[in-house]
Length: 205
Image (cartoon, rainbow, N blue to C red; front, side, top):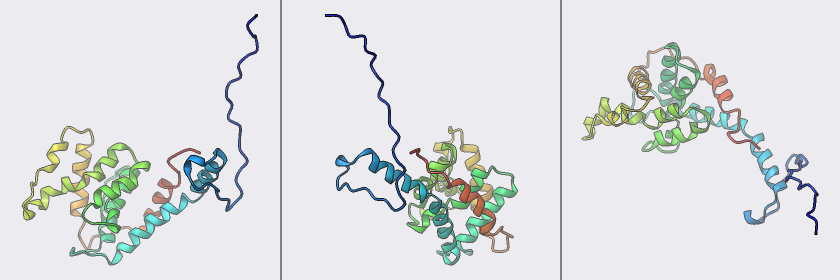
């Protein structure tokens, strides 16, 4: 029998109709879901992405009356750190990190660096993510001895390509940003940067 000469057609992903506003999936188990339903979920997820920036700004505003023993509020500290970074001609990404590096305190002070770093991770470079993630290790040089901890934790990161920027981030801006008389830029000055950074969803649908 002669071999068939019919060409094998490649699998073609057919476009799906755009979901209607407010549409919802009907599955009760993910293993019973359909492509159309995930497209509905994906579009809805992308549509609310702008809310992420507004939530970040809301969390920062809520720090206006959070002092936790410091001389300045956590909002002032965030604004001073970001203002100092901007006036030192840091990149927009680093200024964003300076503004948001402590935003994890909205959830938990004990592990706020890790929380803030993960919130920023989809929107910044790996170097910037690492700087936020480890900023307490770098800050430790200035106060860990008071708690009986090593003040040289930053040294374990010395071989990293972002080490010098992390030192500058901490020593020139973060640890020095507790001055109530420092003329900080208002949060609204940084709002466009926050909205631009979080405007995109970090996955494509």
